[in-house]
Image (cartoon, rainbow, N blue to C red):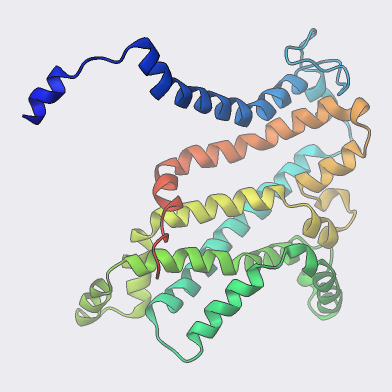
Length: 297
């Protein structure tokens, strides 16, 4: 009967289709246009040889590669060094944040110890405060630590990586814990019966099952570090050859948008390529990982 009813169902008229479906397509098109417009505008500015923000058009009158030549040809602005620094710091930070968050979440999810709930609440409360509030404290701590531990001194890339590695522990641990809670504990018990240690269970069973959410954390950590400006500028200071791309490009444009807008847009366009490559590589895990841990754990 149900099949027959479906067969007999009349196709929608133009008015019905407009009322029921067309508005959804319109909303979707507007959302896509809103999301893509900044990227299209940046691409247009990158190839606009006028290089001026006030005179820029969506379709440039004189397209060319002059902005890229200017960007790479300025010896006082080592763009490639900034890009290399950003990629190194972002990659190291993504791996460290993922691993530290994974181990902390495993302990919070699988072990029952005194102070566990207090630890979870403390992590959650700390994450409510913006990182901006810690800038002064981080500066003073590194200024003192640098006197006895050289690689933790101000201006050192290693100090920035260590600060970033622990900065996102809270949100990563919460996200991973929620995912770990969805993995049946019977898997752990079966492995323990077979003689597996906690380390073997973690590396051989839990991590492979948590691959989707690990991919999301890696991607978000990489993007966040590439875009981070405040803490990076505080720690690295004004050494041109140790700056990341976000800090270097901000100093490059230095409020002179009409003079440096074209090369600035070209640099931003190049910087987006590694992020897009990483996203495309991890995209099969991202959809599953973004919804992971949504259950109450």
